[in-house]
Image (tube, rainbow, N blue to C red; front, side, top):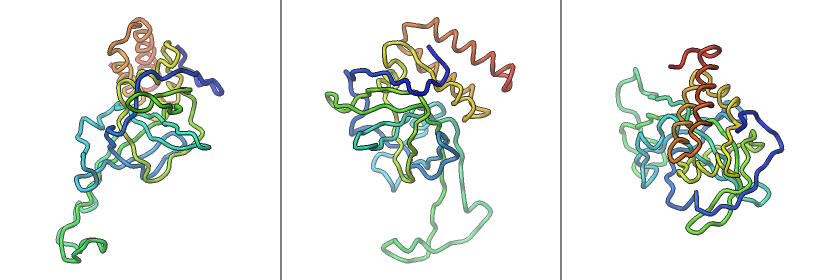
Length: 229
C-alpha cells in the first residue's frame, strides 16, 4: 500500500466484472469547482429525474464517478462525497413570485429553488472497458486526474465492485490519493478517509493493512488536524 501520489504510475488490469451499467443511479450534476480535484454538484430533484436520489444515495463518504471521453477513450473519474450544503434562496423573503418563462403557463406561482449541494473530491481515474452486462475498469490510476470535469456532467453512485476494482487494481490495496484527499476535504479529511476505510473492510482479507492505515489517519488527525476519536 502506498499513500503517496505517484505520478506516471498506471496499473493495468483486466476487468472481469461490470462496475458501470445503464441502471446506475445518477445523483447530481456538476455546477462549479473549487480546484482541479474539488467540485460542487447539485443533487437532482423530483422533476429532473425519473429515479430521484434519496439521502442515503449521496451520504457522506459515498463513492461516485463521472464519465468523460479523452482522445476517443472513455474514462471514469472516481471521487467521494465529503461535504454537503443546503441552499434556500427564498429564506427571509415572503410572497409569490412569477414562474420561470420556459414553463408552459406563465402564471403567478411559487418557484422551488431549494438546493442540496455536494462537495466531491476526485480520487483518480480509470479507463472503461467492455464487460459482460456493462463496463469495467482498466488502467486504474490514483494520481491527480489531468482532465477537468464540465458543468452539467452527471455524477453517479459507484458500485461496490467498482470501489473494489479502483482500490485493488493489481490485487493489492492502494490509497495513493490519501494526502490529497486530506488536504482537499479540510476539516472533514480524516473523517471521509475513515469512511472509505470502513467500506474497504467489507469483504476485505487484509484487515491488518487497513488497521495500520486507520491508526495512521487517527494519529495524524489528532496531532496535526484536530482530534478524531
